[in-house]
Every structure is written in C-alpha cells, then in structure tokens.
Amino acid sequence: MRQMDRSEKVRERMYLLLAWMALALAAGCVFFANLRFGSAVMGVAFQDDFYYYATVARNLALHGWSTFDGIHLTNGYHPLWLGILAALTWLNGGGSDRRFALMLECVQAGLLGATALFVFRIARRFCSLPWALTIQLLTASLALIQLRSGMEAGLAIVAAFALLDFRGSARFSWSARNAFLYGLLASLLVLSRLDAGLLVALLIAFDVLPAALRKETSSASLAAFAAGLAPVALYLGLNVIVFGTLLPISGTAKQLRHHHTPSARALASFWEQIVHGKSPVYALFAVLVVIALLYLAIRRRSPLAGHRGVMTAVLLFPLVHVLLICCMSDWLVWDWYLYPWPIAGVFACCLLLAAGSRHAVWMGQAGSAAFAGTFALFVMYVLLLYTGTNPAQSLTYLAGEDVARFAAEHPGIYAMGDRAGAVGYLSSQPVIQLEGLMMDKAYLENVREGKDLRSVLRSYGVRYYISTEYPDKLTKCFLAREPVQAGLDSPVMTGMFCSKPLAAYPHGYLTNRIFDLTSPD
Image (cartoon, rainbow, N blue to C red; front, side, top):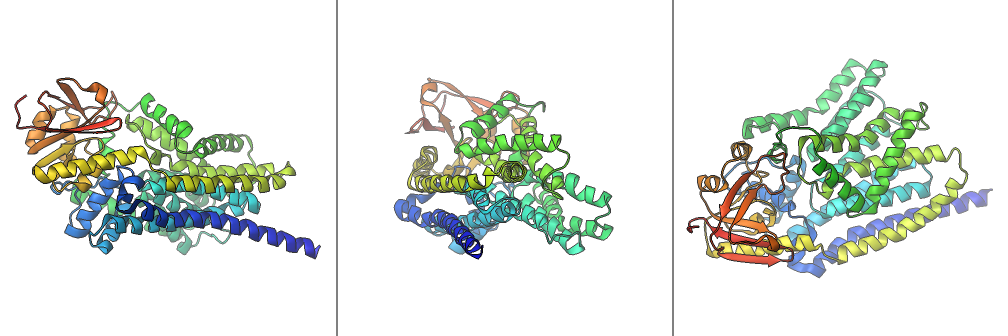
C-alpha cells in the first residue's frame, strides 16, 4: 500500500513537471520570437488596436498627456493595461520597438504563468490532478491568444482568476479584511477591462448579497467590501473631471445606435468568433458553459457545496456579456471580446467533472488520457503560434510603415478610421482617429449627427485623408463612410472623394489611399 502511494506521488509529480514544461515553452518562445523577427517583432505580434494603447502610453509616459493624436485628450482605453504599457514605455525611455516588445512579452509571459497557477489552484479543489492540469492547459491556450494580441483581455483573465481563486479558497471568511481584499481584487478586474464589471455585479447579486441576507457577513464587512471598490469610483470621477464623460470614449463611440434592441450583426459576429475563431477551445467551453448552467438549473443540490452563488455568477457572465454587447452596439466584435468564455469554461469543467465523478468510475482513468492529448496539442499550438505570422497584423503594420514614410515628406494633420493604430504609432504627424475610439466627447457629436465627412475633416484642420478600401470597390469617385465598422443601426459620416490619391499602398486585400483635401475634386 505504501508502494502504491509512492508511485502515485511520482505520477503526480510527472504530470506537474510536464504541464509546467509546456507553459515554460510558451513563456520562452517570446525570446525566440524577438530573435527571429528582430525589429519587425511589433508587426508580427500585436493587433492593430494594440497600437492605440501603445501610442497613448508613449504620449503619457514621455509627454504627460493622455492623447493619441497629440492634440485631443482621450480616455479611449482600459486604464490598468494602459498604465502597464506607460510604465514599460517610461522604462524603455521611448527607445527601440524591439526592446519594448521584449519587455512587453516578458510581462505577458508572467501573466500567462499567473493565469496557469490560478486556474490550477481553482480546478484542483474540485478535480483530480490530471483533469486539473488538462483544464489548466486548455485555459492557458486561450489566455495565450489574448495576451499575444497585445490587448487588455489577457490581463482581465488573470485578474478574474485571481479574484475567483481568492473567493473560492477554503480559508475565505467574511471578515472585514477579506471583504476589503475581495472588493480590491474586484476593482483590479474592472480596471483591467471595464465590461468585466458585469462579473463583479453578478458576484454581488449571487454571492455578496445572499451572504448578507444569511447573516454570514456583518455591516462592517459590507462596508469594507465597498471600500475595496473605491479605485473604480476614483477612476470614474477622474473621467468626469478630466474628460467630461463617465466611461471610455471608445465604448461610447461603439454605442451610438439609434435603438438598443439586440443586433443580429453583432450576434452573428460573436458566433463567428466562437465557432470559427482562433481556437476550437472557445466552442468547447461555450458548449460546456451552457450544459453546466442547465445542470445548475435542474439540480437544486450542486456537488460543489458552498460555491453555488459564485458558480452561477461566473457561468452567467459570458451570456450576459454577449447580450449586453449586442444590445448596446452593432459593430463587429473581435476575438478579445471572448475573454469571459475561458473564465466561465474553467468553472463549467469543474462543475461537470465533479458531478460526473460521482457516477462514472472511468472518469479518473480518462483524466490521464485527456492530459496526454491536451499536452501534445498545447505544445504544437505554441510552436505554431510563435513561429508563424498573422497576415492581417503584418499587413496593417506594413501599411503603417508606408504611411509613416509618406508623412515624413508631407507634413500636416492626417485622418484615418479603421486600422489607424499602427499608422498613428509610426507616423511623425498627428492622426485624427475617425471612428472616435481615440477622440473626445465633442468629436462623437459629429458622428452622432451624421455630419458631412469632408466638412468635419476641414473643421479639424485635416490635410490628408487615408482611406482603407478593398481593391474591387475602387471607382473614379467613392463614398467614404466613417466609421466603416459601424452597422446599419448606427450613425455615420459620409463624404465623396473624386480626386486622384497622392499615394496608394496595397497590402493583400487592403489598399490604403491618401487624399489631399486641398486638391479640387
């Protein structure tokens, strides 16, 4: 019997060693990516929207102004991620992009490790070791996608698991100290990505308030929890004082719809990202989340005793998130909008595995096979992710380099809508962001009223307008539409351009054309 216990410990250590070797491989690949791509690493690693962050972070770190174009103050970002990027920019001294990318990817590697640790701690409370490590690697693969994009969603995933690990600890009690830390971790989650406030609201509804009704928490603990949320209140107050708006202007720009019934376009976009997106794990987790919610609704007695409120809140989070986004906006969504699914997916796996292990003896043996398959797939996925390039990301960065060379010889104010991130980051001239994502409240009024695009450009002193058109749409004259990503339910500005462009830069399916607004049409 003692020998069996020893062999079991050896097997567990082997599982742990293999899992952390796979994660170490993912972390170590950031150095390989920098060695392989050199100074071009920024162009092959990050989404175009990342450069909105990077540009504002650079202006904030080096010049003390929260601005994208160097002219207008903006809060079109999630604050915690911007703060991290600004700190890295300051440490880099505004130096080489390669060094900045290496610093950023080292931070991302640390965030990936933290995600893996928190997920393992959560899953191990409810599952056998092989199943816990399987869940860990599946979740890490999705966290890697989010972190690799350069967007804030990877940070939000880490913050969410840190919050849920703390709340689910066996040592958690509703003392004033724990309640304050609970609220403080909730604040970090909200500041990492503001729509994660939905998860915090659901936790309050299904966890905090029921605990108060059951007299498990005192008024002092509730006050401590509210005090922990003070950073969010401070952020919102600074928004109103400095920017004249409560929420980020980027979110407001996407919510200028004429009505707020659910948008079929946004819903179809979510479906496309989940089912045909960058990883089939999204679809797997989505199915498991729905099944887990049905199980909770049918079975009044959950196998996860004492965790029903938290479980319900987390499982509802992605569904409520999809519904809210589709009601507020008819824009297309991108893969970083899927960050609630890995969070809920972990808890769905835990619930279903805990329920299944009571009725199926083979679940224990199946865990070893599941871990072996997941380990092999994770290693292959990491190697493919870091040794390949994303064509769309490379194209937008190449377009930014082309425009930057043009702008060096043609000074003036530029204006561009979709895919303006890399252009603004690389250009030596100011770039007005025509979607409004990096502008201010006054600019959004132009979009809301559907004003003539050329008139708005003149009012902002724009000399050069950059269009991003598909080659098959090129005619002698074309009707520009800004923002182009907005759906039919949202207001847009339009303007006719008939003059010959000064320059055209085709890259794959995209062609950027630069028009001089002083040229007669």
